[in-house]
Length: 129
Image (cartoon, rainbow, N blue to C red; front, side, top):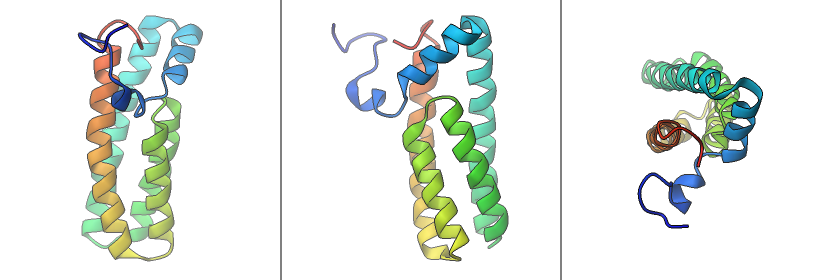
């Protein structure tokens, strides 16, 4: 197998737990799985933006709430690395450590862009692999 064309490379694969996506496809069927993934991508994007805005206005409690929602959403569609970073964000916010929270938030935004792109690319090619 090659890493050309639509097959994701190793670094992209690390961003998405393919087993989770395949499990969703088996349980829900391809069409419903795609709908769920698309809905969840929208929700993840929304929560990242809301968490970022909460940090900007120094509302750490609200930011923590959005970060917790992100953890759950990310696990749902196999974004394990992103879920770990969202957990880190929750912890820094709960400790009222805004400086660390800002650094983790920046990391989360970068990882969200990469992870969601990888997921869309995989999903957009008719499957997870």
